[in-house]
Length: 244
Image 1 (cartoon, one colour):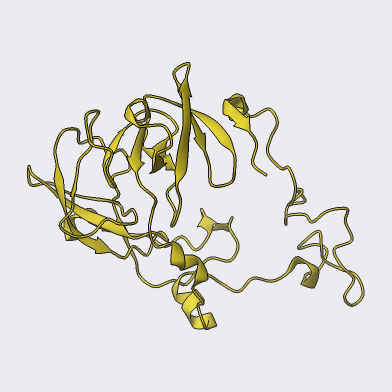
Image 2 (tube, rainbow, N blue to C red):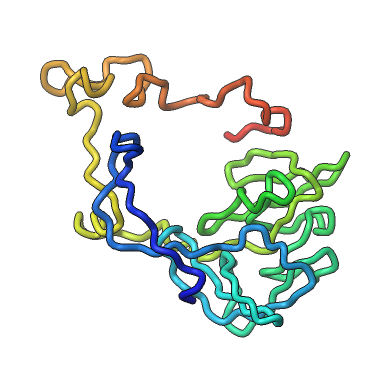
């Protein structure tokens, strides 16, 4: 749908001309598809017109035509196909592709595209094969189990979409050649131990000397493995069980 697409500007990992993200650049021309993460079109049903490829994410997207004539893209859950009907609203049926507030979803249901802040739009469970399980509801919050094993408290007023996202086989894909990576905007990655000490903490030494640190570091000297989450983070109080 042409009206839902805009040309995606190339940045090549740069901000104001300064390289801020390594390994990006040189990709094929690409259009951004505006995705309806909010699912705020309450009470208006829509028909799935097509399941499409989106170069900006690893999950496929569904083109929805609503009864009032409006078109929108949503993330395509597993099992959704052309001709199916979807709707968002508090009295919606718990069916794949339908969206509603967590307070109206049955315990044990698998959901995706879940809002962290009511009204902001879905932020959790948006990549291929992802699903969060609703474990309990108490004190104005829903307890959701993440794919990582983390259990988190989310407001019952937050929107979520029913079902598991499709295209999970994308994790088994083999790019096959360097050229395909370049078309996707991925530049070759140089190992830290292969660089000089001014460019990376792992660099320097004679021959194959290893990283020479107690733990692997990022290019900027921060610890790269283990527990790296900031303990003072405000959202930590909403985490009931940390990821493994």
